[in-house]
Figure: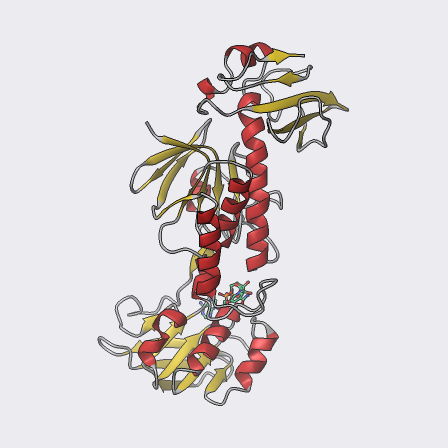
Length: 390
Ligand code: NAP
């Protein structure tokens, strides 16, 4: 039988790891799946200077810290690729090693690298997407970086410390990168910024020996001898799993869900850079992770019984038939208020049955309810003292 977790998080970047921290601290069993390496994009960032409380830290160190925190709190972490998700109660996640079930799934799959799509870029030695990983191979040599965002400029500054000369090739006249990075690059003696320039071709048979560049402003074509090209031309949303579940995406492929990280599919949440949003930063990814985890924790308590909620049903079939292992114990209060259905929920420890708390979930009637609920209900796990309606 597939192993059950309260929450499965797909993706081990800042959003996923933060979600794990919050879910574990809320007492949920958590499985985090990552197919490649932890920390997401940030792991290959030479230096992070805008994470509150950490004035300067390498991306690798920050990734390690995020990972260690989630692991120390008891997150089960597996290097497995989630291949398919079947939503339901519970949902099922199929990986390249097996399958798991979960009360909630948080998609935090982030973004994947965009490439220039030049002939030979997949076979030539000297093409890299990670300055921190590969920069040392080109110590004392001339290299180029393609792109005009913060990644490209950070990579170029990092490489300038190692390499003889670095040329940044950017297709427009304005840089998208943080102005402070552009300013630093302009002041770096062995770094050249080429604006309005594109890479037309890669030269070399086995190893990269140079680039053919074209200045788009004047149309001039010129050679640039380099032994490496670092591509930093942005990222594309990794939203295949979300799309296969029927979660709506925008025209660029980002998951079209709001700040609450709730998708229209019950039990499926989306957090981090793959979500359509204005500001895509490390801190906003972490914020999404927290929001999604707390929503998932609330949904775990609420979503399952509400799918078949009648007081009688709860008495006869608390939780276990719905796929949640026995032992889980919660209190759930419901009432009708002004046409909305408000629910107070939490673990036995955190919410006393008689306690009045602000609703953690508010939905119009009919969205979650398949049965009408008019009374306050207290439900318990199969192993608890008899359940009662009040
Ligand atoms: P980005 O901001 O999307 O920049 C991608 C760059 O590649 C842009 O300059 C773009 O040009 C260029 N580009 C895209 N397609 C191209 C093509 N086909 N040919 C040539 N150039 C192409 O990506 P990023 O730099 O990887 O940054 C991603 C996110 O991470 C951003 O939000 C960034 O702020 C953030 N970030 C943060 C830090 C940090 O320290 N906190 C570090 C790195 C990145 P155009 O400008 O012409 O579109």
